[in-house]
Every structure is written in structure tokens, then in C-alpha cells.
Length: 67
Image 1 (tube, rainbow, N blue to C red):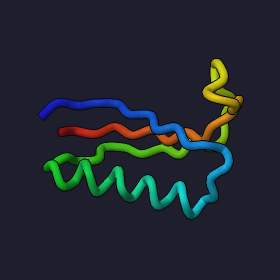
Image 2: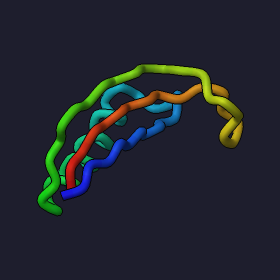
Image 3: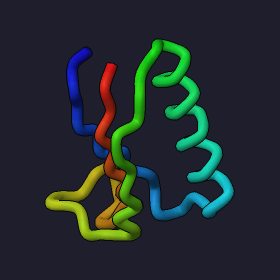
Image 4: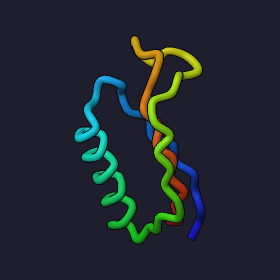
């Protein structure tokens, strides 16, 4: 299995419940493909290096996975 680092960015307009739902979908996708989670860190709302669409900030979630 190979190890990967994944950073998911979510719109600052999403609620905590919506972000949690999206993270659950990602976790299910990895798990259904025999992947393993090594580490998960919620980095919270941070500035983007550059605007994406009209947003200057995003919610960051960092994962280390093995798949």
C-alpha cells in the first residue's frame, strides 16, 4: 500500500454539519477501497494563498492515508 497526504478544502459558507457530512463521504470512499487512515487533523478556517472563485478563506482538513 502507498501512503498519501490529502488536504480537503471546504467553502467557508458551509455549516459544521455539512462539512462533517462531506468528510464522512470521503472516509467511506477511502474505506470502501481498502484504505486506512493514519492521521486526521482539522486545521480549521484559514486564509487561502489565492482566491478560489470569490473566497479568500476555506476550512482545511488534513489526512494521512494508506491505500
